[in-house]
Image (cartoon, rainbow, N blue to C red; front, side):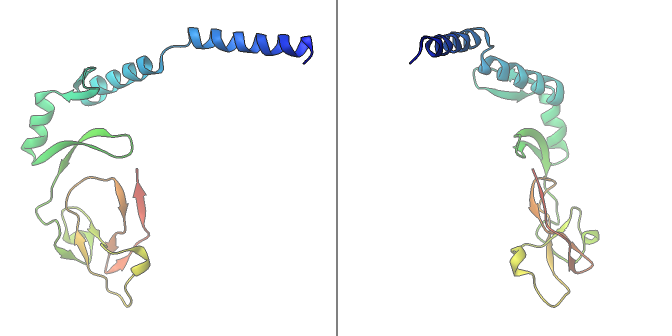
Length: 146
């Protein structure tokens, strides 16, 4: 190995060590972001010991009053109020027959022929997951929401 290559490698290694030493700790940055998100978006109090957002009583109470429960949902795992529908699971052929949406409960490859299709009313207002809506007895395109 030439002296120039050795110096280049040594300089690169020292530069990396310096960058690591002055870079902010990812856990501290993540904790600050989570604390900010918890307080600003959800009105909660960040608990660093448990690494989770403790929701204030008012938010939880308002959710429970409408028949919901606070739960983490979606890919980001944010808290939201998820309320059940009284007609959840009932047969339907259109979302107009449900408090939520009329959903096909089978696999997309199992699309029934001929029409009309009978689905089930959604069980709650959680918008996350993969769904195929039934409208006028026909299947719409599948949709996945993260």
